[in-house]
Length: 443
Ligand SMILES: *Cc1c(COP(=O)(O)O)cnc(C)c1O
Image 1 (cartoon, protein in one colour):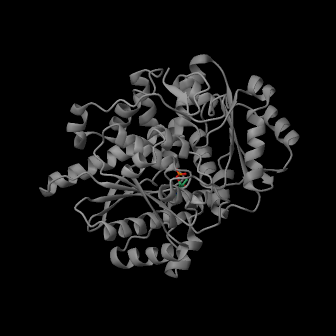
Image 2 (cartoon, rainbow, N blue to C red):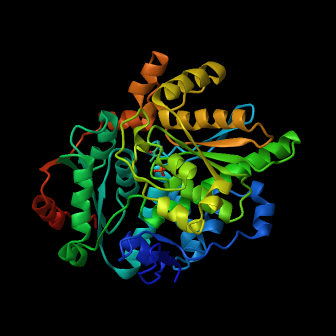
Image 3 (cartoon, rainbow, N blue to C red):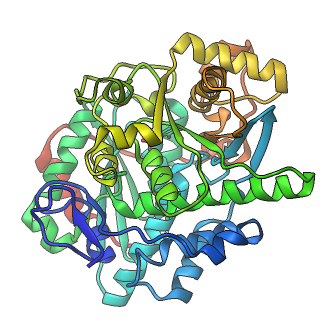
């Protein structure tokens, strides 16, 4: 028994069950029952460990149901791209999480989840169908993560006309076992359809239906590793310059708070982190919560950093559970800054002028928060900002900030040229249901 539901009214389950169920039967999210600190011997030589080795060390306690060597193979296959720590300027570093196939950090968790799921399905000789609602980045990461993964069929529901052209191309050009569904409705409609599918007893029985958004713990846990890896690179940098290592402050551009929760888990596991900063756009319910101590969800508003437009962050419950529902405890570890659209554009310009680096709008929210933090509490801790996406994914915003479009990287150019395929569907559950029942499996 490794995972419990936050509400505590469902029985504890293994990693495999949490992965396949996504949501606990009591309707709340699964969290690890215990967090055992990483061995001090491993932390002592962190600077010589690779991202995959840190992944294995941090994930092992959560996945006793995957043998060690198999876990190693999964991580090596999932993380084939670099996650470099780049020195931006005095005291600020960027942890570039966007070198995966869809150019956003979500690739890290989605690829691990896909291979872990396929491990269990192969072992049990079963199949599963994945249904995911997306407003953009999740869908492309899941589509690419599950592409050609044996024994899984995936369907990605996105709202017609409400995602960027690039994001749509990234989802609709994968094909094979990944079916892109354009729903005549809003993102909320897509989410409702997926919920209905997950609760449909026939789909559960016949198709083993599950989902892969960040409520699934299997996407969140692998993200712990890159915080350890960022610190390992900082360690190594200090060593080579003859500087003293100081535990960094970590800034996380935040929406559903999954990435921030992974950073909080990294700190709980003993990685040397001074404290955490949540950087949000105008959707700042989390900052309000830290400030007032009482939580109030809101309808989300649209901003330039649209992957963070969340009015009711799904992972807040996980953070509260980690800190024993004690707001004072949360405040000791996490601060929050809110960054407006105007400040985001100004930060993209400012950073480009000072350093030559082009930030995507989400990373710009992070860097802006980092600067504000450094002004408010000038100390000697270096700051690591999670750079969550490549600027090439947001050409309109970059052009607005800099007067010229960003470079479009290779994988995106390929997606722009590939043949797109999607099924357009009215917002109607019966239509989705019959479509899912007919989806072919890849083998
Ligand atoms: C999803 C996303 C975020 C928000 O991450 P959460 O884990 O939901 O807080 C930030 N930036 C980018 C680019 C994203 O795709």
